[in-house]
Image 1 (cartoon, helix red, strand yellow):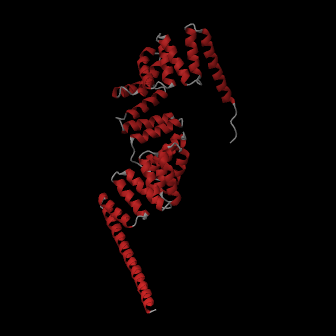
Image 2 (cartoon, rainbow, N blue to C red):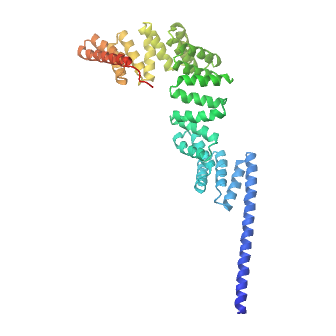
Length: 383
């Protein structure tokens, strides 16, 4: 019995010693983890990402289930442009702690920067579900929604951000972009005016404002905006073209010709300017002069109705009837709903003796025009 009590006492003492040792080891590990955390954060503050990485790996060697350490490891890896490894670290953090917002946000943001917008959206939505006040995640989500052409949703997210930051230039520009893509030009002009009133104006901003005004059928005001844009960015080909295009649209042909010619002098391959200048000459009755410009435009934009149609008309007027009919046929194939395409093709066919086909095209043009007039006569539905 004494021997049994001795053995029992020995076992209890041994178990107690083992428990104390385990607690001691656990306390030591916690101290080490705390130490590595502090050192890692100091290295991060000084921008020494490689050294910080070693510290976070040391934490994970001691505590492999530490989701925050996995998240921080992903951050320092990403800082070293090791994006794939960073993604894996963040995914491991999510696996351990699904309700931790940080790794969801980090993955979403990294995907936005890679322009993988559709992949980014679910991660960013989840980050916002977990942290509704995470403005960085909401801003990244807005970018991803614009990138996936979900403009209405993007506008709603931006509106929430603007409630708290109504004078944020980047947010205002993002809002304008989303509104423009929805053809909500009136709202876009208001937003862009607010952005311009903040100062730090650029030619690009004034050009966007001009585009919004033109979309809102305020073309004369758009021209003034583009004039400001050219003053601020005189070397921008795109801005100069926009200015010339608006002059053409307002029938100020002499001024438009000068601007468009200047654009082509600076960039002979600017096909939009070539088309607009060619169309200008065609409108003024100089089909021969228009021809080379329209040829250039149709080569660059062969799938556009306008380029093929204008070239077809120019060819017919300069006597190249076979090619002219081919171009007009191509234009009609690209958009069969435009009455003028069928009308010009019908006239060309009649002119070359192809009466039956010509009559069909002219009849089609008449039917389209009558359908359009009938639609315009319909009363508007009550809202």
